[in-house]
Amino acid sequence: MTEEPSPVIALEGLERRFGDRPALRGISVTVGEGQTLAVFGSNGAGKTTLLRVLATLLRPDAGTVRVLGASLPDEAWKARGRIGFLGHEPLLYPDLSARDNLLFHARLHGVGASRVDELLAAVGMAHRARDPVRELSRGMVQRIAAARAVLHDPPLLLLDEPRAGLDPAAAEKLDPLIGRASGRTRVLVTHDTERGLHEADAVLGLRAGSAVVAGPAAGADAAAIRELYS
Image (cartoon, rainbow, N blue to C red; front, side, top):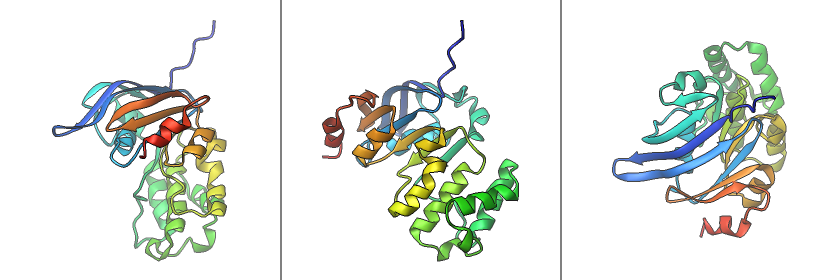
């Protein structure tokens, strides 16, 4: 009998506090290989905190957290290099060119220059590759940041409003890299209820750090999710 593969993400009773303020309270969820978890909630609900815990950037205060088979925080080093993170900050140096930024990150991951050029073409930025990032529009910077997030071909993507600042044509260019078509396991934070439900296998709705909506995306209560923003 074939053994079931371990989930890419497994959370049980995750807690995270900032001083006396709870940011995440008892979050339990699993995400299988190739699946997408869509995370909904208003500002301050705990969405970004959740992503930062999964990215090994914040330590959990309680509960069990396993990412890519590694137990966090003790085994964070096992998972860190296999995660792609696209947050509100692009994590790019403004005075370096788009290409030099990607080359810098490529060296950190032992990736060759050909991969950098391949991704610049894929996100439609080859023609601006040598321009400083500070001279690029917000949407262009977002495209370069998306290329950075997948530079090392990570099996897990953590995405915080990845289409922010993108026109439909630019967003379409990124779909093969960070969209469902990429085949990667994804945690997708989004305010777009309709699109999030369409792309997701499972949903997590947060309010004040607690899960108030959780379960499969199929049959999820879209009205309950929209209420999270009221």
